[in-house]
Image 1 (cartoon, rainbow, N blue to C red):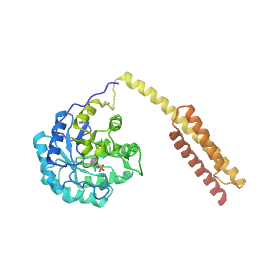
Image 2: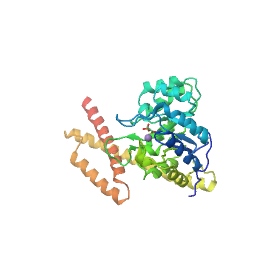
Image 3: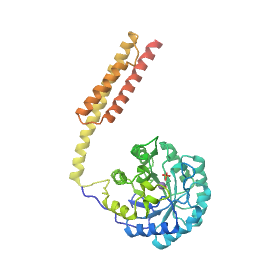
Image 4: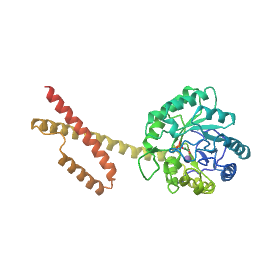
Length: 366
Ligand code: PEP
Ligand code: MN
C-alpha cells in the first residue's frame, strides 16, 4: 500500500493533527562545532521539525560523560538563530528548568531516569508553574504505566497545556535484542488513557543500535504514533554518549524518506465494508473462543471436585507438562508462535487452577 511521505519541516508544536513531528539531534551537545554542524546538516534534510541535544546527561554509572552543562546553552541559541529550528533540551531538576527558560529553549523534556522519581518530577512541575512551554515526558525506565501517567498529571496540574509523551522502552537485565524493550502494549495503554497527548517514539533508546532503528520507527508509524525522536551525530562512532545508536544526518534523511505513513481512517465505502466484513469474522471467532473457554472451565471445575474427592493435589505436574508439549507441537503445525501459545496456555492453566482452588475452598467450608 502506498503511504504518504515525510517532507514537511515547520516550526510547530505537535498536535495529533500536525503529525508526524520529527525531533532529531545528538544525544549530547559536545562542542559548539559539533552541535552547529549537526544542526546545519539536519536542517538541510528539510525533514526535521525540532532539534534536540542533551546538556545535562543523567548517566547510569559515574565516570561517563555527564554533559557539558550550561555552557552548551548558547550553542543551542546559535542553532536556533542560524537554522530556525526550535530546540528541545532534557531537564532533570528545577535549576535546569530555570537555565533553559533563561536561554530561550523552546521545548523541555523529562528523561526516563527522572520520570521514575515523583519528587524530581514535582520539582520540575513547580518550576514550570505559570510558564507556557511545551514539555515532553519520557516513559520511566521501569515498566510502570502509572508513573508515566502520574508525571504527565503533575505537568497538567502545574497548568502546562502543551504536553507530549515519548516512548523510549523499558530497561531489562543483560544483553537483549533491544537496549530497552519497547513493551508496545504499555505505550498503547498510555495512548488509550490519555488520547489527547501526542505520543512520540524514540527508536534510538529502544534499539541501542543502528541496524534496527528503521523497523522500530516504522512500527511506531504503523501503530499511529505522532512522531519520532531520533539521535543524530556528525561522527556517530566517536560520539561522547550513545555512540552505537546514533546516525549521521544524511543516514537520518534517507531513513525518514523511506518511512511509510499510514492514515488511521479510510472513509471510502468499499474499503470500510471489506474491513467491516473481516472484523465481523474476528468478532465471531472471539465469541466462539470465549464460549469454548467457558466450557473448558466448567470441565476444570468438575475435575476439581474429582481431585478433592480423591484427595489429589490440584497441580499435577506430569499432566501440565503433557499439555505444554502437546500445545507446542500443535502451535508449530498451525503456524502459531510457540511463545504466544505458551503464554496463552499458561494463562488458561492459571485460571483452571484458580477455579479448582475455589472448588476446594468451597467444599472445605461445607
Ligand atoms: C536521551 O534522550 O539522550 C536520554 C538520556 O534518554 P532516556 O531518558 O530515554 O534514557
Ligand atoms: Mn542518548
